[in-house]
Length: 99
Image (cartoon, rainbow, N blue to C red; front, side, top):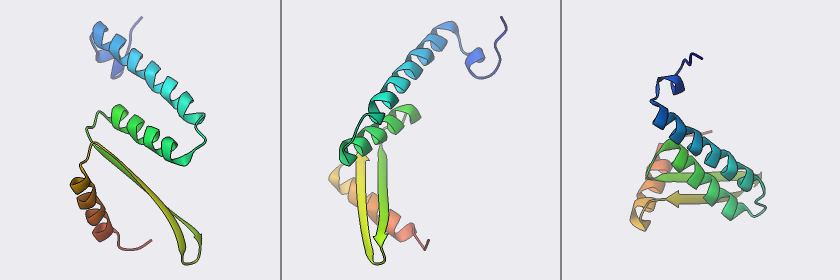
């Protein structure tokens, strides 16, 4: 059997590690799909994204306009201090020009 692509280029031990990580990812995705409460769902989704990306930090912010002038928003942070979170929020608010 000849393998091609990124996974085929990995040494056998790395392929096993990658397969295990993928299995854990799919298991976590299935568990995430069972979550009914928004806050725990967002927290686990962010944690999953950070893990899959191999990052140390992540920030997720959602805004939903329910009616004109009435907006609901949520934010979650992973791996940031309270001061760093505020810095991220300031950077995002300055970076948004319009929708």
